[in-house]
Image 1 (cartoon, rainbow, N blue to C red):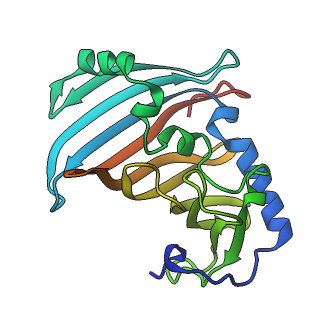
Image 2 (image 1 turned 135 degrees about the vertical axis):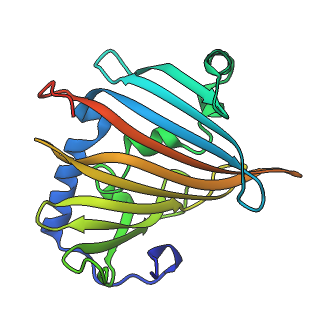
Image 3 (image 1 turned 90 degrees about the vertical axis):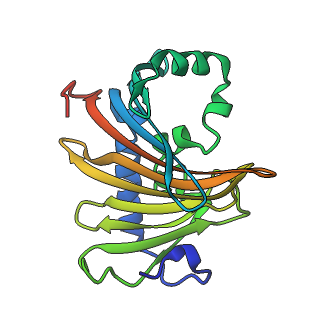
Length: 235
C-alpha cells in the first residue's frame, strides 16, 4: 500500500461537510472529554538491532479523567514475566513526566487525530486513492499546513463517510522528538454507544538514543473499561 507518509503533493480536498462532521465527532469522542475513567493495558518491548525482543514490560494503569484533573494509578507491572510494580512506582516518582513520555504517548492518546475543530486549521487534508479491500471507506491524508513540529503529524486515516468518523489511522511526527530517530503510530477505533467510534488501541514502533546507545522499542496500548461521563456506562 502506497502511504501518504511518503507523498508530498496534495490532491483533492475532502468535502467541507465531511470535515465538519469529522470535527464534531473528534471533539465529542476525545478520551479526555468523553471518559471519566479507563484502564490502559500497556505492553512495551525493547528490541535489539535485528528486531529480536530483549525485554518485555507489561503495565496496567487505571486512569481517572474527572473535572479535578487527570490521575493515574499503576495496579500491575511485570518485567519479563516477573513482578516489577515497586520498581515502576519508584521510577515514576523519581522521573519527570517529560522523561517518562519522551515519545508523546499521552499527547497522542488525548488527541489521537488531527480532525478536531481546534486542530484542523493546522493541517492540509487530501483524498487519496481508495483502499482496494474497502473501497466504500474514504482514505484521507494529512500533513502540517506550516512548519513541521514534533506535535504535528503526517499520515492517513480510514474514514467511514456515513458515520463521519475515523476507523483506523497511521501517522508519524512531521519532525521527530529529541533523541528519536523514527516513530510510527497506528491507531484503531471501535464503536462505543452512544458516542460512536473511540480510540481503542495504539501501536507504536520506534527507535533512537544518543551516541552509541541506540534502542528500538515496540509499544501496544489497549484502552479498556471505559466509563463515559454522560452515561456512566462501562464499555
